[in-house]
Length: 232
Image 1 (tube, rainbow, N blue to C red):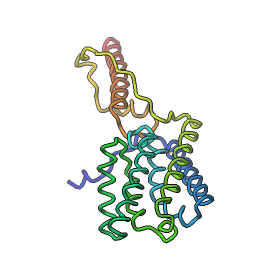
Image 2: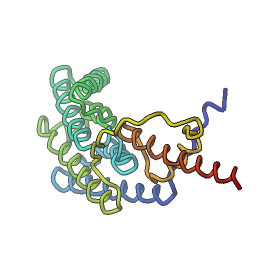
Image 3: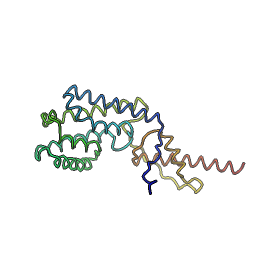
Image 4: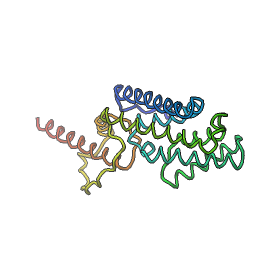
């Protein structure tokens, strides 16, 4: 029972961890610094929590659906508008902050821009610092500026480090006949396919399709190796 609580092994290399960590640090620093230059450092630092969480998604799991451009821009916009509206109508209390987060989640799901850090943003925008409260509806400015800066940083850094971002939808794969039992995909084939990708994956249907095809290739190679070894 306790073994179920243990995390699964990460199929990425330490070099990828370092790449994502450097990108996260640079992206967060650029976003907070630029926002601070325009709106003041007090406002910028108030947003650093959600920005750090967004940086994890955009730099470490950039292939996932939650890390795509519309997710961060749409998510931050939904959270900002809903939280400011709730704060204006119901006041800035813990209850209204939680209500704003829930309403932002529903709106993000409806608009297909789910972005988990936007939930934290909705809470922070209701229970805000005095500098952010003083901006009133203009508080959307630092929110969208920081989100846009983080997105541009991720696009530049990921592509410069040979990680394609944003994720492009894959072409539909042709239908294939089921492989014989000797070529059935095993857990070992899946691990080899994950090692080939060398990146963090928040799996989407396109990613899973690519993973399956890569696993089939490893299965065929294994099957050929077994045939050759049996003839030797």
